[in-house]
Length: 176
Image 1: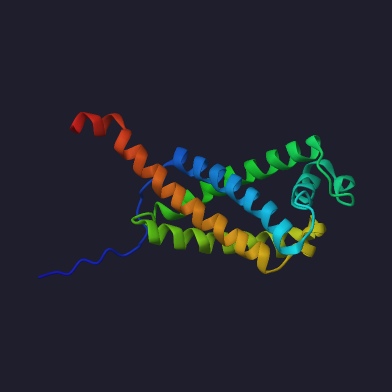
Image 2 (image 1 turned 90 degrees about the vertical axis):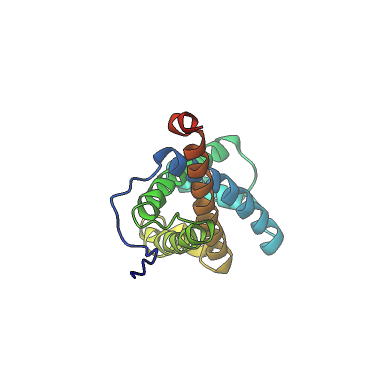
């Protein structure tokens, strides 16, 4: 009698690209809201500081605080950058979890997502700070926790959306 374990080895399984992009977008929206609230509640600083830091990637360092007030141009630029990154990161996460079948259940994909969030944090705050040095000041547990939550939520959303896609596909309706 053979014992077959559901190991997470590489297969040629393709990601659900729509679910991956949407998961990244949704996780980015969730992350942005949580990040702004956490900066306000935990540090007592303006919730617009993260938006200005992200917007500076596109608009230049002239938008960095002070003052860290609301500015529609800054927020629009921050949203554009964040959502583009979110979609891209969602696609990368999908490309990782699908071939290794890490999306086989919600716990595994959420843990894989959190590990991915850790990798994103390390890359953003320890590699990309060579190009965008103003992010070095935000290194720490708050941003680490936010990126772990981002990754776990992106993984969860990918799993959920991929499940919905399978259940609502024309092939699924044909089987009913």
